Image 1 (cartoon, helix red, strand yellow):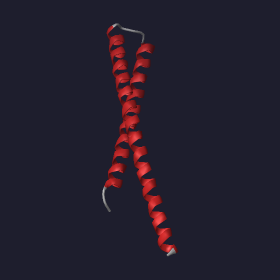
Image 2: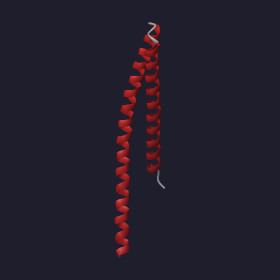
Image 3: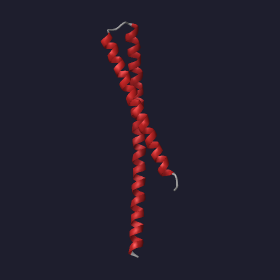
Length: 98
């Protein structure tokens, strides 16, 4: 009898933990997607500024700064996309029946 109760409590706690983790993962994916949109917008702005500076023959240091900002934005976007893909893959894996 005790073993059955312990098993039932363990199963309930285990499923509650998984459900809570999946809900947290959904929130994480949403916040990552919002952050990704912000960085994509920022990348577009930085690319426009770089193109403008190149057309207007801005000083080299300014063009280098713009290039560094574009590289940084692209790097952050790559890592955010990887995080989103990983979180979605984890959610799909936990959603599939065993």
